[in-house]
Structure formats: structure tokens, C-alpha cells
Length: 230
Image (cartoon, rainbow, N blue to C red; front, side):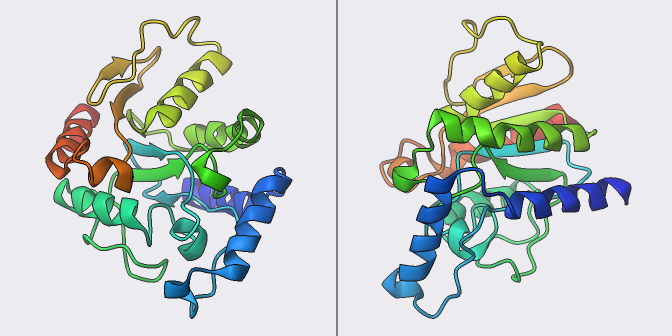
């Protein structure tokens, strides 16, 4: 219970973060204007907290909240096309209690998985700046510290992959990243006990074009479960 309450406290501090004025202004403006399909919604419009099982052995590391997805619902990968693709895969892999993710109150539970991102606010054009990523880095560092059972990190997209390697260098565990190439399905054993698996991001750009298929992503998460021993 101590880990649960500490992670909950971390999430509360994430929600209150005001370090990046550009991102805060963008999220607030999107929440004010809203998309026509969601005019009846009260948008979250704040930094999006992480979500999952405090005993997780697997982490799914994404890029950032979607403007009309997580920035609307307040939960990672919930309410947009990426989440509509991801959660059925997590359900099939045994990590999610149900295949559909629509809101924070839909009853979704995760088992053995923690979902987070390298940026906690929806960025314009889905492109956080290097400074904004650095501002968010301490949140991820603290999450790793508070997830003692973590064994595998599934990096959803190149930026998440690069950010994980940057963290390893920041922690003094990695001198060079030259041997770590981003390729879908690539596995790397990092210094210590962590294993990183690279995956294409479940964005509509990737899933609608067939660059990432359901079977490809399901294979990644089944492999993560096997490697984690969960």
C-alpha cells in the first residue's frame, strides 16, 4: 500500500505541474475550444497522470497525451485512435480488464502493466521540445524508483525509445547508445535488470497504413509478458 499511495502522490504532483507554459496554454486552449464531436465533454486539460498496476513488471512508455484523447479524458491512451488500437491488444495479452477505453470511469483495470509517457501534456503537433522533455524527465525517474518490480519497458515510438536511453545515460548506466537502434520488435538488455522492447507507436498514421498491425503489437506485448515472467 505504501507504493500505491506514493505513486498516487506522484500523480497528483504531475497534474499540478506548470513548468512548460507553451504546453499548459495549448492544453487549456484545446479544452476551451473543444472538438465538435466532444462539445458536451468537460475536458481534462491538465498534465495527464500515469495509470496502471503499482506491482507492474511491464511498462508501456508513450510519447505524450493526444489533444482530444488523453487531454480530454485524463487517462493515457484513452479516448482516441491510438487507444482504440492499443487497449484491445492489451486485453488480448492479459494486461487489461477490458478491450475498450473511453473515460477515467469506464472500469478499466490493468494487471502487471503501468502506462506512462515521456511528456505529460499534449504538445502542439505532437512534438514536445527538448526542453519540455527535460522538464518531464524527473517524473519518469521517480516512477522507475517507485516501481520496484519493473523488468520490461515497451517503448511506443522512437521518441519514447530515445528518452529511455537518455534516462539510462542520465543515471550513469550507459556511456553510449550507438548499439541501440530503433527497430520494431528489437530487444535490448540495459545495464541492470531492465529489458527494452522497441515498437512502432499505435498512432493512426501507423495503424491506418498497415505499418503497425494488431498482430505485430500483440506479439510485442506477449513477448514483454514472457520476458517479465508475469
